[in-house]
Length: 355
Image 1 (cartoon, rainbow, N blue to C red):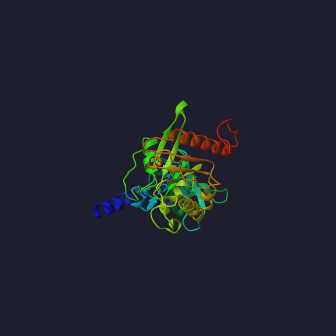
Image 2: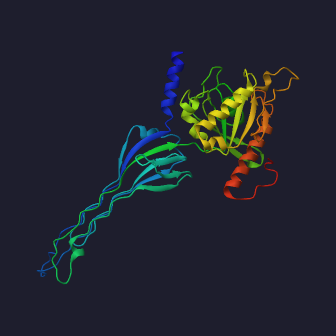
């Protein structure tokens, strides 16, 4: 038991999906106060150059990253300041931009105002979260016909400072929802190359798992498995609440109820109510009902009837015996593609999904 608890603590520490950091853009360089000094030119005039611009803080989506772990070790990030202007009208060098790489699916929020500043969805996508200060003008910029030897110059502007909250939401087509030991991890390992931990005790899934399902004709979709949901999950009980955010982006949900449950109907209704209590987004996400562990049924016995009027489909499967998997995967693919087509405004391909 002690070893299992230690393992749980270790895995949860490795998967970091939230962080709050402070970003400071570079201050602009100050303008120079200088005059030309050349042989034979006794009154060379002002020659102070402008200061360089401060570096920006830029956030960029990096597909090689899967967590926000790096940002749990360091909280303050500063871009380089601009160099000061110099004589002979030389402008100071601009400060280097600071690029912070984040996993795709990260939502960036202003920690003080709560304003959503942006989302990084696609690999390579980027945006400026804090802009560097403008460089100050040197005294050469202030020369006029009536003031040919100005001593005026400007300091550089301060760069923007922000405290930002980073929240990672995994991007998947299908989200698996179920109580502990509902068969989610077994299903994921049966239909994808993912290797989630599978055991006969609750909460063996401690972090979200992603897997890619490959069908015929080069069709693929991504499935996300989160820790089991128990009653009160929306209030923070169990591990499910911590990771429910990761299925808010999914196009459809598979609500998984094992056939060895004491009351499958009650378990299905509990899962639906916990999703609705957590967020309206999850309550409105289309779902199908998946009855798992059909290999436990006596030969010839039909699965129990469950009233699920809001589900777009009902499937009975056994991941161990691989019964019903092909039909379920086809249904999930067609449904996720239909939702994707609706999101993009495209016409749904005939035969993808019929409500």
